[in-house]
Image (cartoon, rainbow, N blue to C red; front, side, top):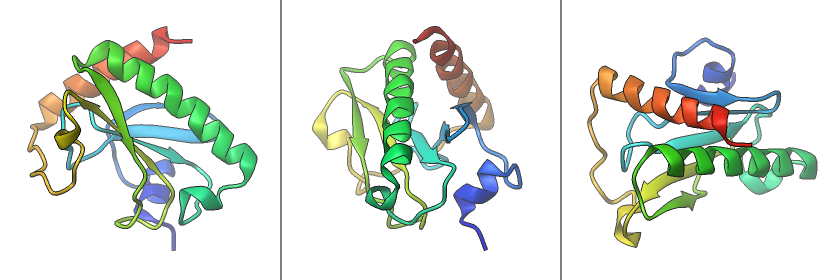
Length: 134
């Protein structure tokens, strides 16, 4: 049985997809710490990020770099924070979160509750920015 992320990758579960390439997908976290909180996920299902084969790891980092640049372009923030935890879903992934302070990058903070319309608006803005970054 695949992880929830594999089900998203396979189109079995909907998501607010920001972008994808042959090896990776990026979508909005449904329990965001901040507006624009994105998950970058390799399509290859492995439990931990550092279990990825070197080529897949490099591909994810290059993809995440593009997504982070698009995030910074579309969501006002001082920087893009990143976290690798992966305890909640047994599928490697990287959290990218637009932040203004270090304290905003903590799962002890209460997640935002955004409407589907807000999520779609954020998704669209990041997706358009992703198309414009190299």
